[in-house]
Length: 81
Image 1 (cartoon, rainbow, N blue to C red):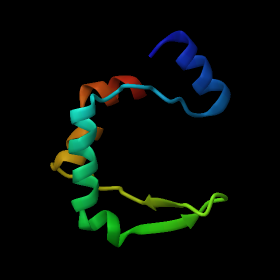
Image 2: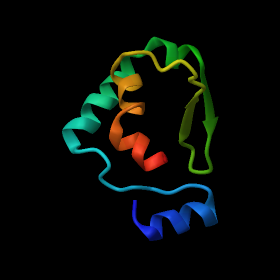
Image 3: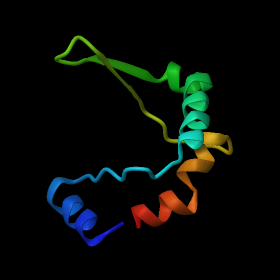
């Protein structure tokens, strides 16, 4: 993260890091998200202002699958630190 990213986080409470993942990695993560039944089981669907939907899943046990390993990857962990 850059100093600007850190300042944005302190100001807004979040930061968007573009290209944290490559396109092939995003494909792998998307597939894992679509196939993880525990996420669907714990999912809340919220309607947005544009007649779209936002899906929110509460996830507290990441496990050793693709999604769990991604959340514990050096890239993600070091960004969060």
